[in-house]
Image 1 (spheres, rainbow, N blue to C red):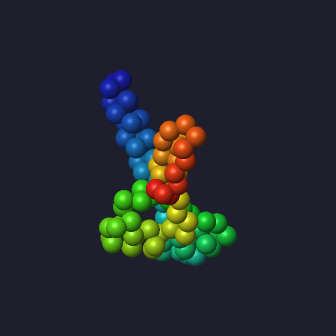
Image 2 (image 1 turned 45 degrees about the horizontal axis):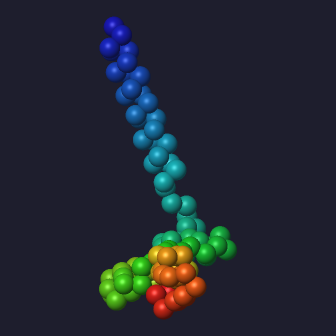
Image 3 (image 1 turned 45 degrees about the vertical axis):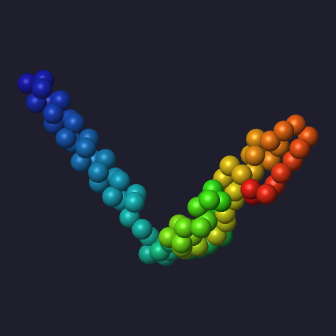
Length: 94
């Protein structure tokens, strides 16, 4: 009897979670079709950290342009990249 009760409880929980996720993930009527549009509707910016080496890939750049309205340097502006030796600064990567 106990294994059946456990199985039914697990199945019920799985159905409830699935239904809850479907409701939570359902887009609203006014939601934008891209992340950028959805953020703009709320007066927000939506950005991504990007490695500068990826900016030469057109598919990657097209996705960035479509989905984000803010882009920052990924690792190129971190401490080790901007000051490779103590007192010697380089911002060329950023």
